[in-house]
Image (cartoon, rainbow, N blue to C red; front, side, top):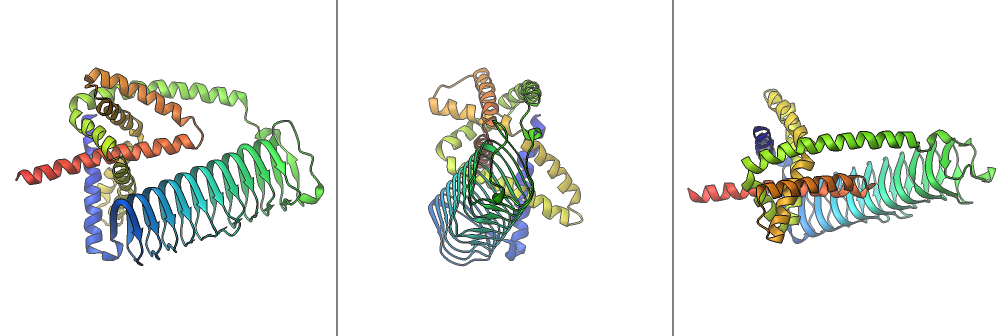
Length: 405
């Protein structure tokens, strides 16, 4: 386990170095890395942008991709590449000519045109009446209010959902409360607890639906295709119980596996995780930014190696190591958070106390994962921050070694 863990981290930096070296010799692919309390992009650029800050304002045309981790993000001008963000609040008030990926508490798309696909994990999502999404829209949210036009397919898993505007592709919805006043031009499959159809709604293709309490009574004027109540779409108790049993077995197995890794990492590599806890406490946003860059750059570096003939064997090895990195994410997060708590509380815990704290945190993380939508978002951010703390510790060690010479 010790060797595997070290190889995972070291190979990540090898991949990052290869990527930076490749972009150095290929300026078109090079990117700008910026951080600070407030970052303002106010000049047109063709380079990819990697931002870590408390606040980000993009008000110039970007011809490359934008990857950003900030507390508040505001997009006010055209982005011709991908937009990938993690933030507390994200406001998009511009044209996006490629894909948009977001994880946030609140996402607002106002009078915007998005040419690519959109995937959003958030607590609240608002898409205004003047907005158009030409690709597919996938939303995992507590609350979704959409009045825009969706040209592609629509997939929603949420708590409270309100749909206006129009959807040209197929629609699939699972959630709590759904209100539809929109025009659905494709097939629809709906399974919700509460279903309200406005008099302005229009279903132009076949609809299969389920809701608690039985079929709806709606006017034939709102649908031109079939509008069928399908009890097979209802969640089944047997399936839920089976999932619970499977989840419990997996949790027990994961905890036993984690205990072994905790013991090995705590005794073989203790200083690195102690430092990771310090970085998480003192530079949380910076740690989150470095972790996000790691999970983005690593696959990109692997792809570059696959493209070259001599790099394929290395790419295969790095790909396997990257899968290990992802699969052991909760274990790394638990140990990092245990050291974070030890540092913040100034307890000076023994290694066995750190082990106990890490196990408790691992169980809590599994419980958080049971929270729809928000649980996955929280775990993702914690994983990025923990790996970012490890990266900062590695960089700091390298700087100290360099200075000692």
